[in-house]
Length: 112
Length: 117
Image 1 (cartoon, one colour):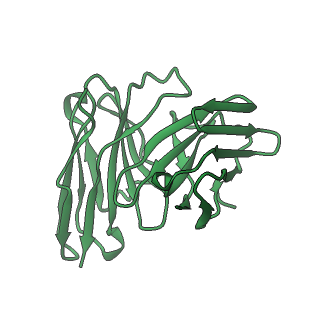
Image 2: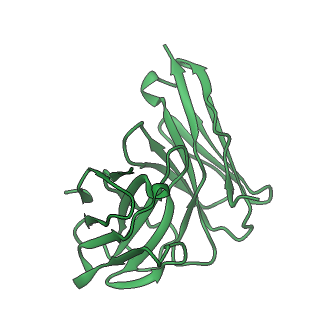
């Protein structure tokens, strides 16, 4: 079982819709969870992080964490074509010095 | 504030040759990371420095890869000899560090795209 699993996609949504990106992890002791966005040919950039169960909102983005189910998601409201990118879920393991383990990413396509 | 700098941006070499990448982290960032990102995959941590000491190199292929961070600032990653499977983007990241925050944000440089022929 991979440490961090994501559906590779592509996930296609129309402009203005809600995009829902999901991630599961295997290490029950994982502490913090990060969502990065990566445009083609570019480096990852942090969107947001979450470490407590529940929802965390930042503008059009909402991260949701359920530690009991070992599940973290990212919702993008009012999706825009500029949101088209690969979204990487990263999990900070309990062991290791702030080590992040990344999933393979989900490719999101927002059509006008 | 300047971001993480990396050079070169692109490198093409033949297998069995050697190559070196350079990274300059954000000023004041104590922790520096080197990642390997193969096409279609997420970044994989190769080595992590806290100041000039190594805190994690468990996934670094030490028979061919080496890295150093002299004086706790700039870092170089070397591959010698390169193999075809080393073709990837090598990303450098830095964070404020200190080891006390579980949400220490990592900031990535633009990466070096390596092609091994």
